[in-house]
Length: 204
Image (cartoon, rainbow, N blue to C red; front, side, top):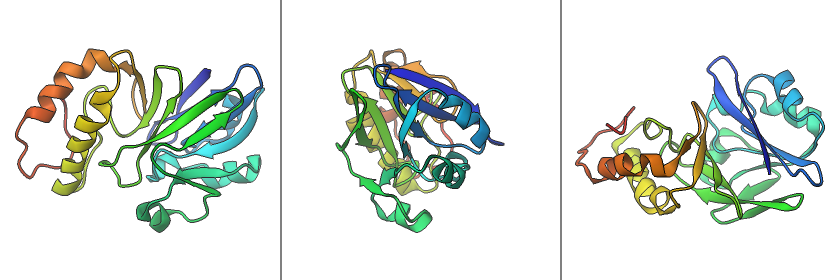
C-alpha cells in the first residue's frame, strides 16, 4: 500500500493518504488546514473516505472543505467526545473495525489517553500504523488530567507494547519511527512511578 505524508497547517501536523496501487482507491487521514496540498496528495487516486485519528483542531482544519470537495463519507470514533466536538460522521468506528481500501484493509485500534476519541489505523498484513497523537518518537501524546495520563499508560502497556518490534509508527507530528527502536525506553517509562502527573512528557 502506498503511503503519502505531508506536514500541513499553521501548527504543522502530518496528514496521510493511503492508496491501493492496484485499484487507485485512497483514504485521507487527518485533513490538516491546507486543502490545496491535500488535493495534491490525492492526485491520481480515487478517494473513498476521510478518516480521523481524533478531533483536535489541527487534525480537522480542512475537514469541512475536503468533505465538500470529495463528497466521500467521514469515518471516526463513535464515542461521546467525538459527538461533542463534531457531528455527522457517516460511519462511526469502534476498536477492531475494518475499512476496505481497494485490495487492502485497515483496522481501527482504540488508543485513548491524549483524547478519549483516539484511534490508530493499522494496515492489515503490513507493519505500518497511523498512530495520530497517541505516541511520538520522543514521548506520548500530551494529556490534560492525571486520569488521562493513567489512561495513556494503560494504552502504552496493553496496546502499543503488544505490537511487534518491526511496527513502523506514523505519528500526527514529527518523523515516523520503528517501535522496536523505542521499546526499551517506553517500557521503562511505563514502569516508573508518575504520581498525579499530566501534561507533556518525554520517554527520558
